[in-house]
Length: 252
Image (cartoon, rainbow, N blue to C red; front, top):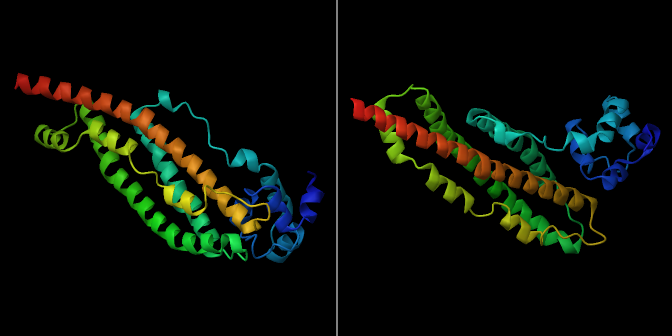
């Protein structure tokens, strides 16, 4: 679509064409549900924004918001953890606050979605607190233990402290618990009926569901990286450290 056409479209039309655009506009301080009847050009003029810059971002939205296809299987453990920590940061600082704003400002004005509005406003903050707690706990325990194993593999360890840590922690047990952990999005899927949209669903509902679906996809990718790449590499590292530790203890 030509730039002139995008400039002249109402915000509601822009977002209805591609729901992901709501997130891009949000980063520029444009809330689609507050400026829905204004054209993009009108909103930019009112807010002192460059319409050409925003149009370029909207045109590139499909590429901008797709996850990089990194060859993580070839990465060392420390880089995989940095990748996961960066994902945590994006979830906690960008993606989830945006979805939270969408939920807080949600006014269904549609009989089919009144219960969804009510339940999401109750459930999403609970989900958010639980999710953030899980992320920080993972970084403070699992990632910390793996970093200690990394240092130990290079010979940098205190024998008694390392022994106590290995007795206390089991990556195999942690991996099993992680893989069988309850589906975090199960409750949200249930109240949205699997993100089912009626033919006359309001635009706000479409945007929320699009973001929730996208977030769930990102969570699944994140879980696969942990279950299929991080844990196998970390367990191999743990076995290597245990072998070196016991070999050294026999020499002493």
